[in-house]
Image (tube, rainbow, N blue to C red):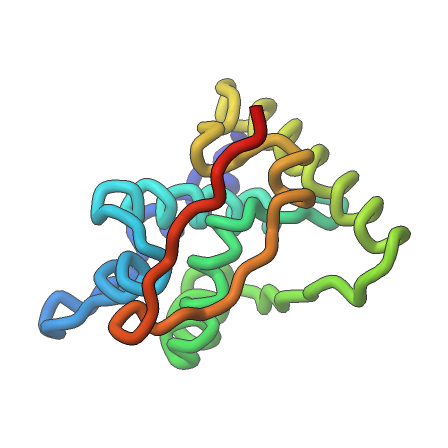
Length: 163
């Protein structure tokens, strides 16, 4: 990292998503909505910050893991935190979220961007992505079939694995 990038990274790393005066924090909500343990959510938030830094320094589009994308989606709901405190005051630029339009070409495009994201991650952080947060492209783009389910009214059982 050059000096300008180090300054930006320090600002991003110091940015606080949680309002500790709140009884239900950003991290708490992330845990509830995704069924994550608190420690995993904290790690995923850190990976989200790393991803946003990479977007700021990259000369090509990037794609997050699904887990990082969940943090990004939730942060977008906290509009003042995202647009004013994070984008404007911390990053010094707007970062828009561009979801897929569907189809094979989009899947290939986002798959390519995902691989470029992981390559840049390695080049900047000098380590591989944590695979529990950044799975392979096959998993990232092949096993996604989610729906929001009210767990107070429904039971969810995992499918048996084929042997």
